[in-house]
Amino acid sequence: MAEGTDFALIQLRNSLQKLGSSSEGYEDPTLMRFLIARSMEPEKAAKMFVQWQKWRETMVPNGFISDSEVPDELETRKIFLQGLSKDKYPVMIVKASRHFPSKDQIQFKKFVIHLLDKTIASAFKGREVGNEKLIGVLDLQNISYKNVDPRSLITGFQFIQAYYPERLAKCYILHMPWFFVSVWKLVSGFLDKSTQEKIVIINNENERKEFISDVSEEVLPEEYGGRAKLVAIQDVEVRPLENGKTN
Image (cartoon, rainbow, N blue to C red; front, side, top):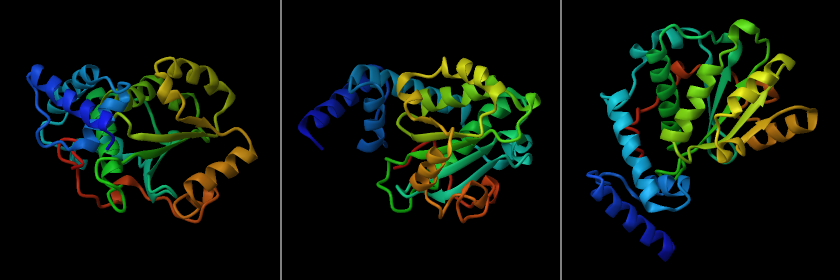
C-alpha cells in the first residue's frame, strides 16, 4: 500500500479508538472500503464504521441471517445467485415480477442483509479477501403495478450505500417498462452520486450485448443471452459471513 494509504489507515484506527470502538479483527482491505466511501477522510470513515458496527449488532445479533429467519421472502424464489462474472464478481439476479410489497418490514430488511451477505460470501474463490464486490441484475420484465415497491428498492440501495461500502461493482436494470420510469426517478433521488454511477439501464441491443460481454455468458442464464441456468439463492451452499467480516 502507498505511504499515504498507510497513514490514512493509522488515522482511521486512532479515530475509532477515540470513538470508543476498535478495528481489532478487521484487516486493511475492510477498513479501506470505509475510507474510500468517505473520500479517504479517516474521521468520517471512522464514524461510518462505528454506525455499521452498531447496525450489525442490532440487525444481525447472531452474526448472520439464516434461511429460517426470512421464509416468506425466500418462498417467492425471486433472487438468484449465478456464480462469478468475468471480473470474478458474484452475479445476483432479482426477478421483480416475483416480488410483492412485504407485510413484515423487519423480515424484508433481514432478507436484504441475508442476500447481500450470501452473495459477497460466494465471492471468496479467487479473490483477495476483503475486496469482494457484487454485480446486481434487476430484471423488470413482466412486472405489473402490484410488483412496484419503491420503499423496498430504496431500502436495498440505502443498505448498500450505508452498510456495504464499496461492495457494489455494477447494477444492471433490464426491461424497464414505461410506467416504471417515474418510479425510478423517485428511487434514484435517494441514491448518492457514486451509487448512481454504478447503475446501468439497458435500453437497446448494443447495450444488451455489452452487458452480456461484461458479465459473461458462462454465468448469465439463457434468457439473458448466456448459457447458464437460473440458480435460486437458497439452492446455493455458501459458508455464511460472521458479522459481515470477510477476513
